[in-house]
Length: 385
Ligand SMILES: Cc1ncc(COP(=O)(O)O)c(C=O)c1O
Picture (cartoon, rainbow, N blue to C red):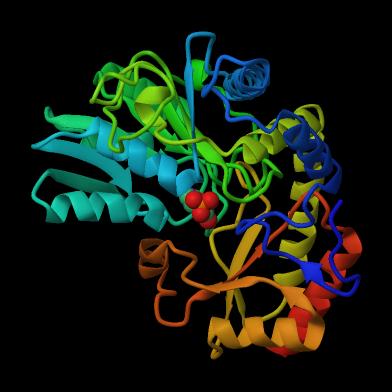
C-alpha cells in the first residue's frame, strides 16, 4: 500500500481512496514499461500486445458490473467525463431527462448547460428524509418525451444506496433507458446491470475501485447507442473524416490512458474477491462512528437512522459552527482528514437545510480501523463540547 504519515486519520475516501494500492500500481508500471506501444495504433507485436491488455481490462470491467457479454466498455478520464459523454450522446433537441436532487454536479451541470442552450428540459425528483429516491417519484416524473433517466446509485453526501432494481422496473415499463452514476458505489457494493435493467453506467477509477486518478469510463448495453460528442483519431478507418460509429471508437477519441487502464485492471483483480467482506467491516465501523457521535447534543447526523442500504459515509453538522471550521480543527488539532462544505452536491444541502454552513463528511475506506474511529469520536466530542 501507499504510505500516509502514521498520525493522519484519512476519512475522505469518498473524494479518493487512500492509501493507494502500491502493489497494483507497481505491477501496472512494470507492464506499462514492457508494453509501451500505443494500443490499437499499429500492426506490430508491441501494439497488438498493448491492445490485448486493454481488451482484457474491458472484459473484466463488463464482468465486474454484470453487463453481459455484448456490453460495450469505453474509457474516459473519470466519471465526470463519462457522464458528459453519456448525457450529451443520449439527448437530442426537445428531449426530457429525469434525474434527482441527490446528484453530484457531474450530472447537474451538464443538464443545466444543455437546458440553458435550449436543447433539453429536465425534472429532478426529490429524496425523502432518509436520503432515498422513491421509485414512485421517478414514475411520476417520466413524460412521453423523456429519453433518459439518469441517477446516482449512491449519494456522495449521505451514502444512501438507491433502490435501483425497482427504478429499473419502472423505466423498463416506460421504455426509458436508465443510466447510473456509480462513482461512489463501484467497488463498495455489487452492481448488476443486467439484473437491475440498467442500460448504462459511468464509473471512476480512483475511489473505491482503488485505482489511480485519471482513469474511468462507461459501460453501455446494446439497448442504447450514445452518439459521439468528441471526435478525433481512433487508429482505424483513417480515410473516414467522420467519427467511426463502432465501439469503442464511437465514444473514445485519442490515445487511451494505457497506464491507468492496466492499473485499473490490477486493482479490479485485487478487490474482486474481497470487497463484499470489506463492506461489512466498513458498515460495522460506520455504526461505531454513528453510535459514538449520537450522544453529542450539538452534533446533528444527517439521514442515518438505519444502516441498511448505506455506504460507509456519515455526514453531520455541529450546532453553531461552520463546517469548514470543524474541518480545520479536525485537521490542525487532531490530524483527521475529512471533507467539509457542499461536496459538489448543492441541492442535497439546500434540501437538508445545510446550504449555508455546509456539513462535515466522514467517509470510511477499506483501511479504516476501529482505533481511528474511536479517536475521531473523541475529537468530535471535544469539538462539540
Ligand atoms: C456521486 C459522484 N458522482 C461523480 C463524481 C465525479 O467523480 P470524478 O471526479 O472522478 O469524475 C463524484 C466525485 O466525488 C461523485 O461523488
